[in-house]
Length: 298
Ligand SMILES: O=C(O)C(=O)Cc1ccccc1
Image 1 (cartoon, rainbow, N blue to C red):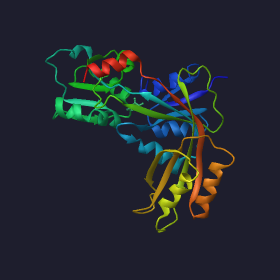
Image 2: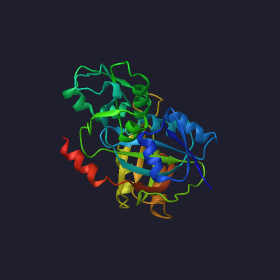
Image 3: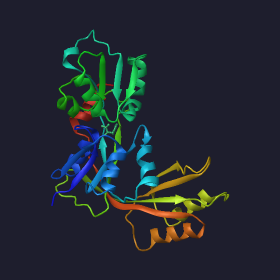
Image 4: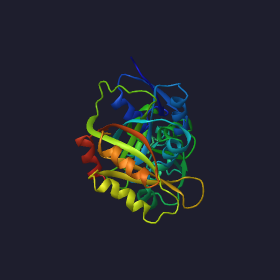
């Protein structure tokens, strides 16, 4: 049966590309913001949601982490890591060497991924945040009379009929984003064109208040069991300065012995631990021709 998927839209966002690789036969429902995606699945309007959670150049997508920690009770059912290529695009009416945009629109993470390029090549031009890269492309399409450009992907240029004026403007060639799949029930991965990479387990750990060496003890519970951590991120608990929650990714599936043992040890230390998910990880490999373009254009 087809699954319905809330994703950060509109059509042709990077999230849309990730969903198309992971769930080619399912029904995509575009939402305007990450919280809207998470509310949709939480309130039962869709079967699942796919949202960005981390970028290799800019780090965590804090709104996603904070929503998962504080606002919704949704397990992570999968992750997909995809290569990210950012391009500048303009309305075809404005495609001339003399055209200099006054404002560049894009998602804050996309702008951050091109920071060096914008500083060196387009210094002084105002950047404005949009809810997604494709939302920026849509604004450019709908406003041919304005001196504006968007940073978005190739699919957005096609979808919104824009002309790419500079390819691959992201500051480092190894630009990848991780997206998570969230659902209250089990997820079917059918006909996915992404490559399976094994399993991950994500835990949320709240340390006991004012306990010297607490983080060291937390890490040692994983270390002596030789449990490999692929990420540790702290987010404010929003209860006062200095109070943080740790989100820890383990490079393995939840098992019967090692992970439960580590969790029991953390609880004995006075930590509050909850499982955010144990799930398959997928990867989209960079096309060889794109990798080459990326090298040539820098
Ligand atoms: O805006 C998009 O296209 C998204 O899917 C979010 C995002 C933004 C920048 C890099 C990766 C994902």
